[in-house]
Length: 174
Image (cartoon, rainbow, N blue to C red; front, side):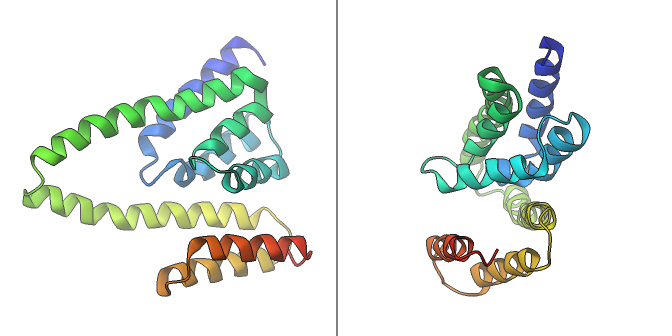
């Protein structure tokens, strides 16, 4: 990879950081578009494996960005994607939290918070669609929808869902 391509990757992840309301996983469809479709740095299996490995590992949810960057361009790729996704959102979140805390009783601020919920949900649905649609068969899409409905409508703990997904994969069902 050339230095220009690393800067392009870093710059794209800087922009994605500002769109990642609800966490970095919400912009995974655009990461897929750039890393797999446009730049050809990863294939579908590597993209999905990066997310799966990082989600299974203990630690912050954003680790999948570093895993993708590493698979795409080694240590410098991991550093550029992780720094790109973390710098703007962390700085903006810190500043916005301080500002919002000082004005937490304003009606406009409460309305903004309530309005962001559907956007985050839609971004998470798009991520689930991208991850399940890349694998052959319809079982993955059905399992994604079932997991989303169970998390939404029941009090089943998320770790139980992860364990059941791991069991289904170990048994070869998916």
